[in-house]
Amino acid sequence: MDPETNNKSGTDARELDQSVSFQRVSSVATGMMVDFMFRSLCRHFKEAEFEEFKDTMSVFEVITKSPALKEDEYSEKILICAFLARVMHGKQVDVLFEEDRSVMPLMSAAKIWSQLEDTAADKAVFKNITILLVVQSVAVCLVKGERSSASSALKWFENNDGLAQNLGVKLKNIVKQTETYHPLLMSFSFNHLLEAVQSYLEVYLEKNPSDDLLKEATKRVLSSQSVESLKDKVTHDSSHSETAEESTENDLETTESTVCLRTKRKLLSTKIPEAWKPESGKKPCLSIRRIPKSELSQFSEKSMDSTDIQKKRKAKQKWTYQLDQYLKAGVRLHGPGKWSRILMDYDFDGRTGVMLKDRWRVLKKAGVC
Image (cartoon, rainbow, N blue to C red; front, side):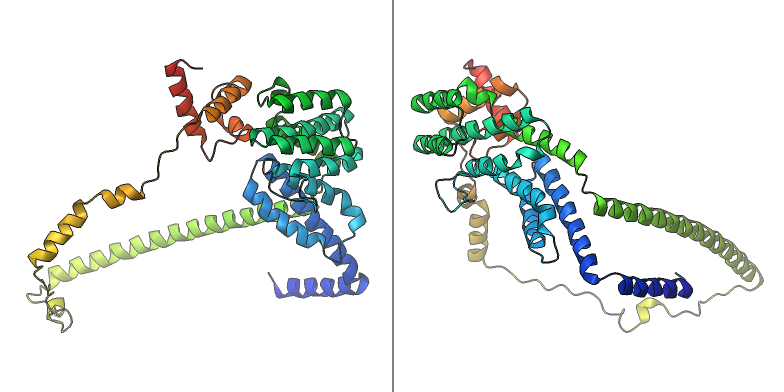
């Protein structure tokens, strides 16, 4: 950049500082950062990126506490992010978001969701998510084998006017009979809850883009890419010309050396051989120490002993009857091959989609599915 351009930009910056207060600029900049973090959280939620969501949430909380931020303008988005955080931890019944230890994450999410009714463009979507939160608050407890917690969740919804009478009766019977695979729980699964919240976020972001900072960052990335491509082209052209010049010089040197050899032939070289230099004249020396037979026998015994290695190997996880039932129910609901979705609906004690696939193949061969 030219010095004149630098001076001009510096003058514009000073004029901007005099005409606009820094407090107002800071408020706008903080708001843009909140919008960017809000969109990032929505993206991590959609992609089911749990760790990335937690890291972004911690930054989001710090920014929203800035005194430069007008909380009234961003209270809605802060509330939505709090709702998403509770849904993300929905299956972890031991995580607390409320002072009352009996309030599990999905119950706390239902409390916040009741305050977001005006943000839902479609009232049917709002009602559907409300039912899903109630059903899954009970279903998660039953899957964890905590029947008393499921009953407590139902009572909590009744006291907070968040439970329809017909739905309450059905859920009470399910809890009483401990029907983990009841059709109602399968129809309103945790995976369906995530999909419903994602559709709500898509509609909300269409009406509230919150992408000013994102657009500006995209422009800068595109401009930097064009500059880098131009630099690469210039570098390629210059390297090509340098290569041509070097080849020409090499041809000239070869021609000159050829002429010299023909006119005057040297029998002895005037260069000192490398081998005669003091440092290069040293020959490499290898020190060999004889190993006693006692040490050699110990070494061979240790290398041949595989008991230590076998002890370090992780014990193979056994499939229980309950896990097989989870797998069968997941396949009935989503179909074979949808292992990632099935993993989201049930707790398989850290197993992967490949493990589910192998187990399903075993069950099919045994004829028990």
